[in-house]
Amino acid sequence: MQTLQQNTLVTYIDTVPDPRCEGMCIHNFIDILIIAICAVLCGVETWEGMTKFGRKKKGWLSTFLELPNGIPSHDTFYRTFCLLDPTAFQECFTRWISISDTFRNFSGDGLDVIPIDGKCLRGSRSKSKKAIHMVSAWSTRAGMVLCQRKVDEKSNEITAVPELLRSMYLKGCVITADALNCQREIVKVCIEQGGDYLLPVKGNQENLHKQIEKVAEQQCEWHPEQTLGFNYSETQEKGHGRTERRMVWVMEDLSEITEAKKWEGLQQVAMIQRDRKLIIKSLRRYIITS
Image (tube, rainbow, N blue to C red; front, top):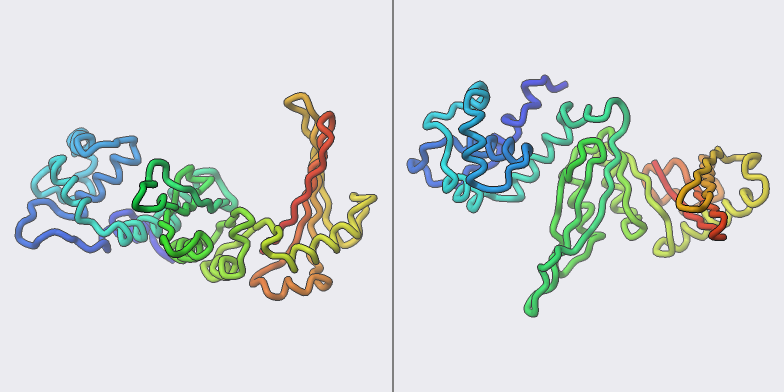
């Protein structure tokens, strides 16, 4: 078990390689990084702001940083981050966030749900190149992005997500994503990294989807609360001029779903149905989870 001292930000960030020329630096590399991180976490958005933050908090910063020549200038912050290896920095910072009790305990006890999503960056498209596509992992407990990965131009989101997950410590986390990322490789990486998953199943996993649909609809059609082999729950909510009834069936006996054996860690399948009154509509979704 790691001690509190071993889990400090300084310990993790100190492993980032220093890209500067030896013998030409008057500030410690770790001091620059820690001041910048603390400033950004407090809402600072400019290099000048980092210097102002450091000067105002110098007394506090000096309790755990050496600061041999005081607070770096805004030009020093700029030059250092221009040279910095972003991948190495991100991996160290992500490991600290993932393991740190500080972020784990933002919302009390329980699991941290981490949605994975991909987005194109606005304004990144031009005549000569495609838009930049990023996949991100968001911590619902910490309220921040834990990790991001750029999707290679010759690849896609499905191959980028496993790389993203491999850089994270997932113990105590539940990974969610859209149906596009309901893939065996992604599920495998979640389990290998110590996490769990909850993913929707649609037509891109045709065999699995058909088998779950067949079992669920055969048994859940008429008396949902009395369905054998399923755990059942429902809620009702009124709002926006309509009443919505949400029903969920969860099944642990997967003997009739032969495709389940191909998905590492799969323990349960679920069907979620939403019935809306006034706007007559019924929606069904199928879920797999570890």
